[in-house]
Image (cartoon, rainbow, N blue to C red; front, side, top):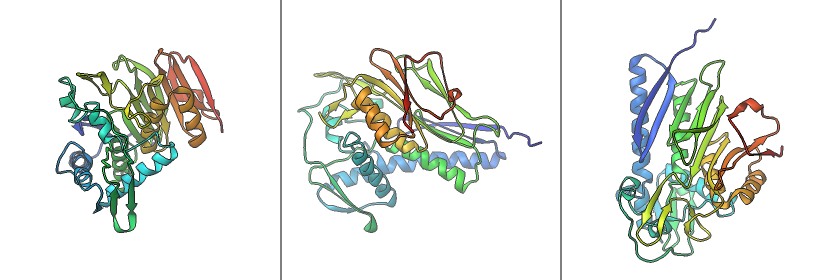
Length: 329
């Protein structure tokens, strides 16, 4: 009979969000070492990809807009992924919303922006935003005037990469990494049981709308209520920029949770459905990623569940669902 190893839970804060990492409890020295690895990893990620830190690699790249710039392998990887999702989602996922976020008032860290009325001059810009990536030489050239925001992909990327590191490099057989509600899991919570991941209400975060059970995989949630602030001229704003208007999105979806194999992909698609809306978002998701599932909250409060035909009903636990959409195989 194999005895279950208890779980070790470590919580911290990085990149202006709550971080949680869970793994099988090791000897005290090893668990302490893993905690330091978690902290160091997110510090490195923030230093590389933050648009608020003037000495970050991303800020340096943005300042060199128009020039060929040598970058790190991690930057090439994230920009290549962003470019892939930009194409796959027909431009709805976009790293080219830096100027639009500034125009909406999100020009400083959210911890600062949410405390006071935002003030900006001018409206959103519709420039010819683009970039050319040279993976072989680890170089990027932003089109003149292009500046990038990678907030729509880095959180999921960092959590997924950390999970891979814990699993493959440090031999963690079962674990969980949660970066601000974007969750990657592997191995189950025990040999017999999956991980149960709660999805909160967009209006009442202390209330759970549903539980989804996964042994291996990812859940990412995006919501127009996640990061909101007041703009002195334009009223309440949020961080999900629609690249078609370069303004905060105004679809009939207020929150979307995506379940799939890759947290990076789940995070990107959750934002896309919030921007495209229920009908167009679900249609595009099923056309491009038929293996994914989704739990969507509409403006009217209706709960929509997109599930795969072959999945057991027990995977989702919720008090009620208003509409069930069966995914095509």
